[in-house]
Structure formats: C-alpha cells, structure tokens
Image 1 (cartoon, rainbow, N blue to C red):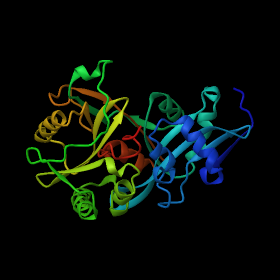
Image 2 (cartoon, rainbow, N blue to C red):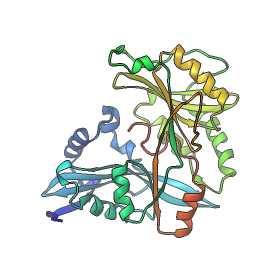
Image 3 (tube, rainbow, N blue to C red):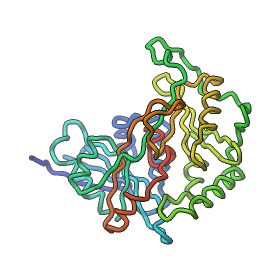
Image 4 (cartoon, rainbow, N blue to C red):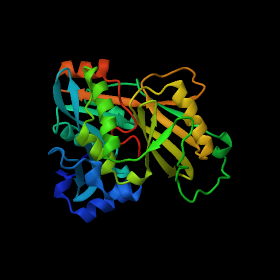
Length: 318
C-alpha cells in the first residue's frame, strides 16, 4: 500500500469556497443542505468538527459528524454520528479511509452511524460493532408510478386538510413544546437513548434549511413530523419522527393520505423488522455501527439502543 503525503484538517481550517466546491462535487444533496453545512454538522453545539483529508494539498476525503447527547442510565454522555464519509474514487483501496477514520475516532469516545456496506468494512477493521436491528419500511402508493413514464411534479405541496382525525398543525414553538413534553415523558422511561431536548428540536426543525417542506401531524395526542420532498421525480413523504410507535391505525390513515395527495411512497424507520406487513410490504435493513471506549456503554448500545428514527443523523436527506 502506497500512501502519498497527506494532511488531515478540521473544516474550520479550510477555505470556504474550496470546501463548498468539494461538497457540491462529492455529495448529492439539495443545494440548501449542501450550502448550510454549519447546520448539517450542528455547529455551535460542541467543539467537534468534521475532518478533511488533503493529499498533495487537494481535498480527497471527508469525515462528517453530528454531535448528540445520549442518556446512559442517569448520566448524559457526549457522542457523535459519523456522516458524509467520502474518499475520492482514485484514492480508495489505498488505506486513506482507514487513516481518516482513525483520526476521526479521536474526537469523541462514543461514535455511532448508519452506513453502507463499504464503510462498514472499514469500521469493522477498527473494531466497531454492528447490527441490523433497524429497517427502513416503505409503502408504495402506486406501483405503476415506478415505470419510466412518469408525471412531472411542479411542486411538492400537500393538500392541507384533515383526514380521518389526522390533523395538520403549525410548525411553531407551541407545537414543538408539546412534542418535547411527549418526548420527555418517553425519555424518562428509558435507561439508554438519544436525548432530543429543546435545543435539539430547535436545531432540527426551526433552523432546518428545508423547514418549509416539514409538516407536523397530530393524531390522538401523538405527533408525527414528516418531510415531503421530490427526488428523481418521485414524490416522497418521510415520517421523520413519531412520538409513539406507529400503529396499524396510523399506517391506514397515512395510506389514505398518500392517495389523496398523489404521493408515490411513504417511509419511516422501525426497530421491529417483520416478515410481512400489509401496510408496508417492503423493507430495507440498515447497517447500524457503533464504537465506544467504555465497554459498558458499547454493550448498552448493542442491547438497549432502540429509538433511531429518520430524523436522526443524516438518514432523511441521504
């Protein structure tokens, strides 16, 4: 293995124009998400920063992160999501990915990620653990919409009316406060989980660059945060967050809602894979990988970490 002269730097040490040019070339996000990388990496929440790999003074790799707090029994622990892992095509299979990951792992003692198979192979070499406890469940509204002849959607707005007690509510602090109250109640019953507090919800919702495409629904005093988007000419509704487990009643209501709004498919993340589900017949396993210096925390993640949703990490806008 031949490794050329390289440097690893924090993104704050990079020229902003050079960094944006790299992001635009390497990641296929909407422009609003690409440009607002301060939001994407939750700048200001901690001192943690993504890393850049420079080979011969050119950006050839990137390791992003999103800082998050975890509840471990009665303690709050700092952790980071590993996101936006990228090595330039010409520099893969040369050890750069492993070198960049090793440096990234020095940032914080607890690391978690949802990753592809290629990244997982690198993490495994560095003694990360993994499981496939989480799945992305998908409901197709109309299989004919998967054919090459497709309708061109001019926008992705919802029909804003109630449907079978599914109430659309405003995204404002009053609504966020109610969601936080429900979330805090659920948090109190768990010994190990992600801490989604007021600061977290304000960052993820109020400061979100695609805030105008977020819709919040209320059903029987439970809340569902959704993101309506167009991708590859498909109209997609992601259920980013639900304050309670998504029941068959909720699935049935959203199924009707898909048809009324001509939405191609609906998706959410579940920790309960099923062999069959009449509402969501298709599912894709997610690679959840993690590493912690403390073996107790590592074991706790493996045994008790059960509440990842599409709103976490970068799963929604990948």
